[in-house]
Length: 429
Image (tube, one colour):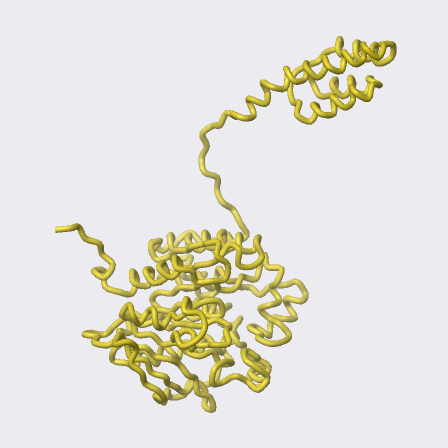
């Protein structure tokens, strides 16, 4: 029975009951052949049949269609599946390695990407770096585990940054160190030091207890340097530095935080990492791409990329926290700069990098694109023969740092910054 002959039969039948029956079964019907007899009989009964005969024909048609339909339904319930090869995953993120076949190709391409990155953040407009002039304002011993200092240091000729510095007690040799970056929170770095806010994000406290020296710098528009307009307001920054960017500013300052770590005898300068959440999450990949002294880094719930992002203007708002003010006119015209997040993160390779994100943290389709983006970044690590240095974890807990994410973050840092024996397992004796 084919669909055309079924439709013809239904059209010829004037009985309302017949039409109802066929309408119920037709959408489920796919195969078989009614044939000319069905059409002729349907026409004759519709035109000349008595009421009883028409009703009888309705029932007969229903039984007939059910009999033909059931074998097909069983076939659909148990479809035949065949072996197949994995398809090639193609996406817009493939431009990361366009024309790149070898490590030499990548190194040349990487040079181009780095220049684009520095231009994006307007690095050429940063001020001269002053002497650190580190000052200690407070000292406290925390539960006999580590010493916490509240310090300040020079970042511009007329500006000092503040930070908490945690140093584990009884270190017997220089230890690995972390730059821990806080998110856009009213508690600022006090949260990172477990003095206020959400203890899930007390990264300095957590990491000091694991044997790390940790510096937790205050963001340049929070804490001691909250502008008169309010926390995280960047208007006055752009009045002072109209050609620079907020991203360039915080990346530059976070790089100076590495200088502070290197000034400490407790720190092994070859084992410095970075991690952060939200604002501190993308602050981490900006820093790791900018400063190669970062050997391992972790972004937790960092910002979205520029493409495939209906909220892309958030990177260049006209109020409050403005990340990249110079690109706003471009974004409003529907254009994007010649570099995106996947290319910035790829600048970190082959150094270790972990991205942790929530699939339900933001625009759903944008967050799914993040997975495709990360798969392409993995190809860079594969090309450089360091696939073990890249990882990502996607959960369903939104904009947070849940227990399982914290365990993964700290384990990843341990694996890449601590001696091998620190993460080795052993058999029972």
